[in-house]
Amino acid sequence: MNRFENSGEAKLRYGTPDFQVIRAGSYVRCAVTGEPIPLDLLRYWSVERQEAYVDAAASFQRDREFRAGGAA
Image 1 (cartoon, rainbow, N blue to C red):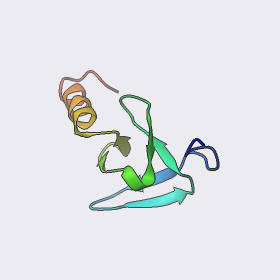
Image 2 (image 1 turned 60 degrees about the vertical axis):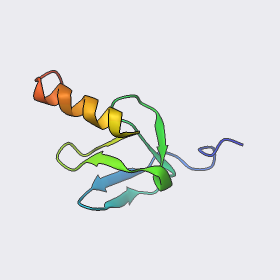
Image 3 (image 1 turned 60 degrees about the horizontal axis):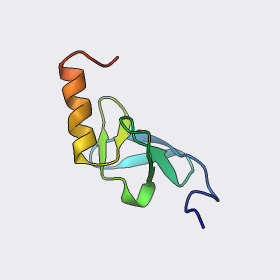
Image 4 (image 1 turned 30 degrees about the vertical axis):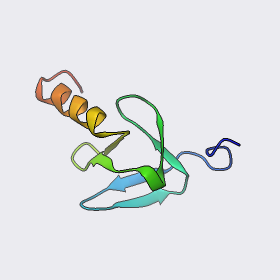
């Protein structure tokens, strides 16, 4: 059984140190990889950019992109 079958993508407001659920769902998508991230496993996000990351490496990659001016 796919853990994302019964519930869709959530919409969150990312804050420090927590996030607030705006629209219920079981996962969000990584802004870098597009991978679904179950809410219970979500550990990395940007408050400034309001986006989630699957892991520290994806977060670091996105930060480098923004610092280099490569992302909109």
